[in-house]
Amino acid sequence: MGTKQTEEIEVNDEMVVAAAGDINTVLTPKPLLDLEKDGEELQKDVEELFPNIVKGDKLTKATWTTLIALGWKAAPAPKVEKPKAPAAVKTPAVAKAPKVAKPVVPAKPHYSRHQSVIEVLGAVEKGTAIAEQAIADKSDALYVKTAGKGANVKQALDIVKSSVLPVLLAMGKVKKTGDQITIVKSL
Image 1 (tube, rainbow, N blue to C red):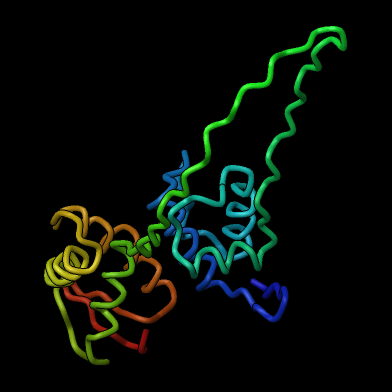
Image 2: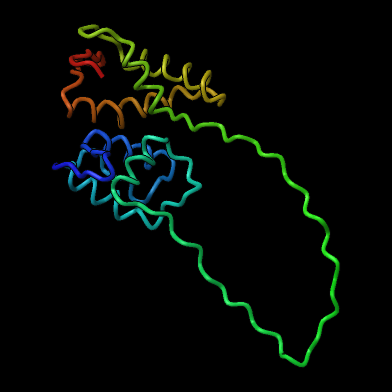
């Protein structure tokens, strides 16, 4: 795929694939984005989802950066016309209650299972083999610790097998022999 440059941010295939994986995990579009597609096709599919992506979605910062670089803009709030009261009707003034400021609670950054898998694989030395199940076990423990959510090794293994590894294999970053994954190039 060619690269698209917007405001000094150059979007490449890896960024589009990572954003698509995050969108699949967080927004679960029907059908899911096909991470095996060619970069340009996948980018078009992501861009077609722009109307369904809203500012409050819990996507990663990297995904938001990619989406904005691809041209995503928050949709303006719909304008609602208020019906006008007839000029002859007067309503009595009602005292409004003073507004009480709500405390601002900083948002907890989103941490996905995909990120935990990539972090585990990034810690494996080049040339070292590791079993898919070991990747799932370690990434699940990291996810539980970092995100504060419950353990789900089966889901972690599904993400390893169906989401992260196919992308890394296609990019030539890892090779697979049986259930053993070997890091070929640094992540």
